[in-house]
Image (cartoon, rainbow, N blue to C red; front, side, top):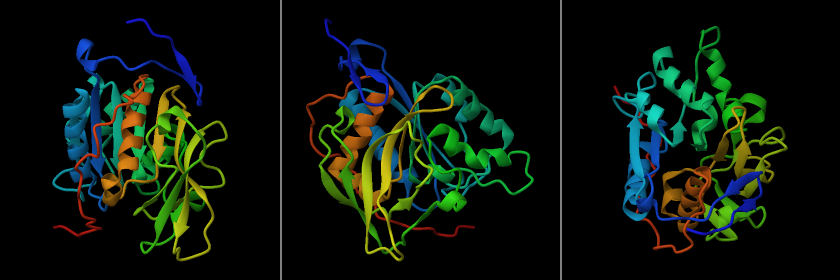
Length: 282
């Protein structure tokens, strides 16, 4: 197929979309375990739509025995064959053997995406040999290195977020100039994202519980490992029902894989998962 390349902001070359059926099907591995936001429910629905609409090959790895299982995510060795890894984690304490395939994936320089609580994916106690993993988001996504660190907080569960485009960008095709997301706004400023990140979306807190300032809520970055990195602090289950958020994630997947997302949009994805919050399990 004859086509020319073009450059999008963020220093990365994007290639025009070609039929994924005519080439190797990209393999996306989702890794989830977040206590609160039902990533173990939203991501499988999202992955199923990706397989149906775009012929991606997907696999979803979940914390066990449920979302509160902080020390076991079976199947992480499957990251070895992934073309893209998408993380939605919160305060995990995985053993070194399970961190090893994550570390190998990072060092491979393959693209990576992170949602919401992946800014505080790990929570090893002080003095633990694995404590350094608590700050992984800073190196991987250009996000704050853990919850409560360097001012990383939010503006209350009663709040929502008005999301607006930071600029015109190919990755934002089909995303509304403005929409309201159920996610309460995460505070990441002033150090994050890094100065060389490409901020895509900003958020303003609606009915915050304390004085609030505009914060970035989605950006791309060339991370410490030289890989394409996309992070968004959105990810409340209600966000997954919003077409603009769906478009953002689909576009980010294609961008991460070095491809242009198809301009033809088949309509909203059917992802309707209620907010559960944190539920203690035995």
